Length: 271
Image 1 (cartoon, helix red, strand yellow):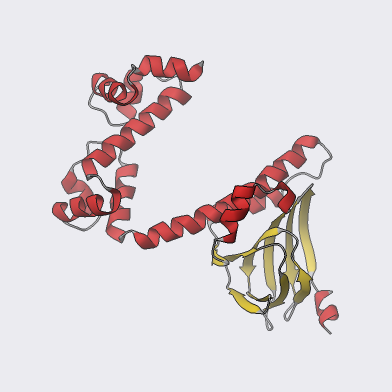
Image 2: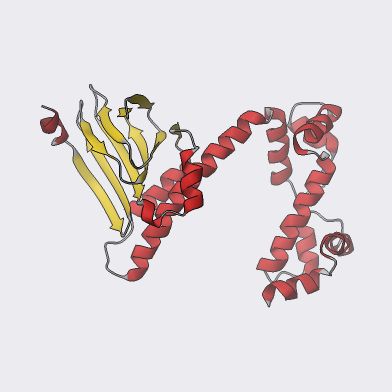
């Protein structure tokens, strides 16, 4: 019976390179897959419906719009929604093409989490890769597969950080990032986070070890140096776009950190 149910599944798209495989499939109600041994690091994203997965005697539920991480060497048995169709995508990366540091990182991550837009977009890019024997296509797929794994790890760490930081602090950081080139005041940032300025200062000191003012000036300097290295914009324009009062203020902060002028920093980067 289970084999018959499996045969009702329909593969929609697939793309593969040496060691990396992207796939998309739709199951009829009551579909199943397995039991099987997992050979890869695999990310499964439930686009519609849900999955219950037996893994080495344990059980994992993957709700709609969530991603599951499957690790190699484990015995799995997927069972899908009994009364509705399910649709999921996946990316599988063989251990032979997975860096050792990433393997160790993946082993410590949660088995299931909300699928981010970036994760889903990366898998969609893999599925849409052209069917070609051109070597560059295989390289694209291989790097996309690894990027999917790194994105899953990033999403897990970002979610953990989000839980660890107060909502008001995250709101303040977002406001600063979005208004970095403008004239910022402590009162305006605190108002955006719906707290008082003294409370805002306490949050920054407690969780980031700095003050709001130092935080936004450091962010401005980082962004300005990035523009110096990656663009040909005049130094005065770089200063203006990153919220410095004038080019001299920007130059002074660059010198304090790098012991060289913005022009010298750019020349060193470009060489």
